[in-house]
Image 1 (tube, rainbow, N blue to C red):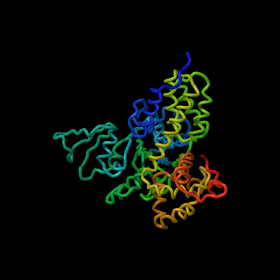
Image 2: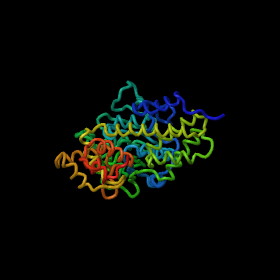
Image 3: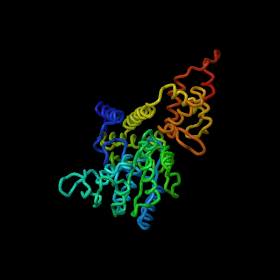
Image 4: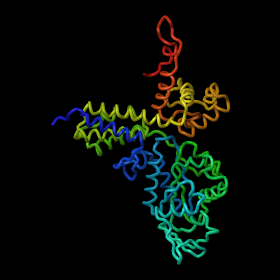
Length: 424
């Protein structure tokens, strides 16, 4: 039976997928997480070297009886959280306890105890049910030790266990935000991080930290400036082979496509630029469209997928720039307009350009914000918009369409249009 062109119900469903992404609603079919585009990847490919380095670290830590810090950083949507889940899986398979933590666990012992309990509140034994000098706290991570309210610390909690322990801290760039940690807790956090980093906890403990491109700087401000070899991962786009493998899995395994999916993979990969967040979105939409079409790949179905994916990209980019004013985005767009997508620009050139609008101090402040929000990221010897298609979107949205250029009265074209070669 020949498939019918996508009907109104299918189109509305595709629109619903996009609305879900825009409003951050929950998606029940996502593995281990309700969020549509966060968490583990159902079909994970790539990051081979990073996984190999992490598994080697697990092995060395187990053998040596100590640990250190393993840092993953990169722009939004590059797949940090998915890689963290893979690392957590490797640790669990190796017999490690795994706990997801947040910044307060680094200075608040009660937060650390709760995190190590993996969702269980403290279970108190010894009479009154209140934490006293002689009360014993038992949590699921296998700790069993006397707790003194006046002397209990995060370091004591960490030293209280015996099994190897992986602490997974996502969004770790938050440690560089104002008052995180609070000023009166900076010394505590410095001590905790140093003890973990230097393996001084009398058992294997690894802090797996993942965050935006400023995360390494945040650790530096807290006294962790030197990482072991192979313990810092700078994530970028997936290789073309891995990108195509992910798309193929979604189309064939999730969408149950019938026949050779090469044409669909070619079309989708031309739009996703190896960027994990875009790959996930397009591939997910493609799988849903194929389910609606009974697994038959039609030109009309592919058209719907590509249009929905492009609309989602618009939503995603608008979310990413939401914290900035239009004039700030125009200033950034003018700075990168003449630079090829993905090519770096030196720091001084970017700041010099921004300073024309905001002065030296304002340019420094704006650059810092752009870096913290992942609109600019380190690339080679300079900085670039990390997502190639977002580079083009910023340029088109805030330069080509927003700025009036003098027109040649004889030819009817602006001098900019004649010389820039901007894509349409």
